[in-house]
Image 1 (spheres, helix red, strand yellow):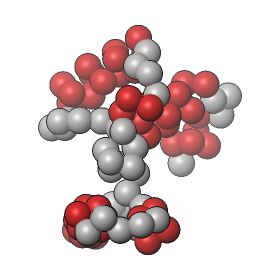
Image 2: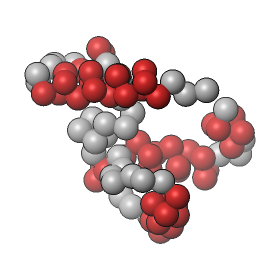
Image 3: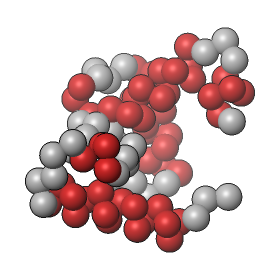
Image 4: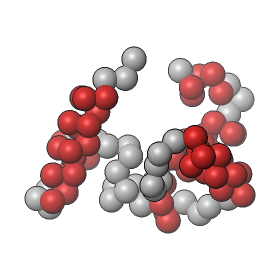
Length: 87
C-alpha cells in the first residue's frame, strides 16, 4: 500500500533541496519522478512509449513524464520475467 502523505512529503523535500541548489541531492533524497534529476529528453521517445503515454494520459491526471518512466517501460517490455519487475 502506498502512503501518499509520505510520498508527497518526500517529493516536497526533494524539490526544496533543488531550490537550495543542494550538491549531490540524490545522496540525500531520491525522487524517481523528479524532472530535474531525470529529464525526459535523456532517453528518446519510441513509438511504443508514445502509445503507452497516450493511454496513460487518458487514465491518470498527469502533466509530464521523466526519463525514468521511459527506462522502466523499456525494462518491462524487454524483460523475460515482467512479474519480477512489477513486484
